[in-house]
Length: 166
Image (cartoon, rainbow, N blue to C red; front, top):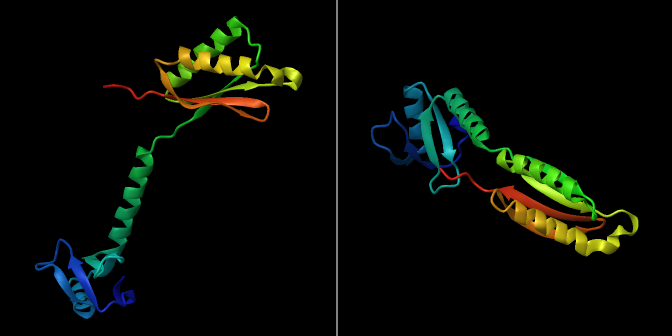
């Protein structure tokens, strides 16, 4: 900003400039002083760097406002966990399936995992079959992001919601 700009020539742009183009930094500073505004460097990596004559405080305010709008538009994705055992019964499975459907309809990702206790690690195939059946039952609402993978005593699978068709 202003005298901190050390480059000999800058590209001057802005609403209050009659003839935008490449001029010396000293001339740009004189123009800014005449308009009682600040010379602000917008794009320092350009060749030559781009500067604008504007009120610096207003410029900062607009930058913060843009950042705030971008944050509001960003979608927060929550991950809901559903835990199974390798020998989960049908009733428990259906109960957890309904919960997962609700989570996916609400826009959350679902992390389904089978936890193996003690010697139940011998039934890895049962856990994988259970998770694949779970993915197949939720096929209409979500897509599998990560297939079942064994990590220590847990076999984990991620399912993300399908985008709404409008």
